[in-house]
Image (cartoon, rainbow, N blue to C red; front, side, top):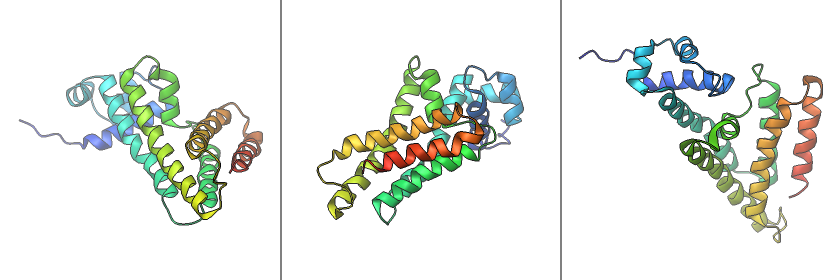
Length: 193
């Protein structure tokens, strides 16, 4: 039996970039062949289907979102950490020439309503961020940096929604106006703390 001459995680990463740029429906098998460098038969024998490769790509994207959770788990002022997170969203949106947005948001908008596996993955992905935000907000409440009477769960949901909303707003805003609009949203969101 011939061993595979490629690393499936590397192929999933390459496929992730293709799906992230084009979306699931608009990505053809030929796009995936070109984007990964594998033949159709290798893609099918390793991942079984376009859907199977998409699931692997989504799971690889989870590693990308881990950086946000780690940022929120760091030491420092809770408000400063949340500001860094929102600022990183702004910078991601300004520095992405392909204008891809967030793969989790893209997958949710495109497929979660019709694909239970995608819906479950997206819910888990957003829940990880939500938990990290809620924990950080509670820490800020204990130190007096964030008003203790505020609902930490609701605030965490608000910030997850704000981040995803910023990604969508960015796609519908001209480059000339993008920075100011996104920073306006981030600053108003921070005022809720």
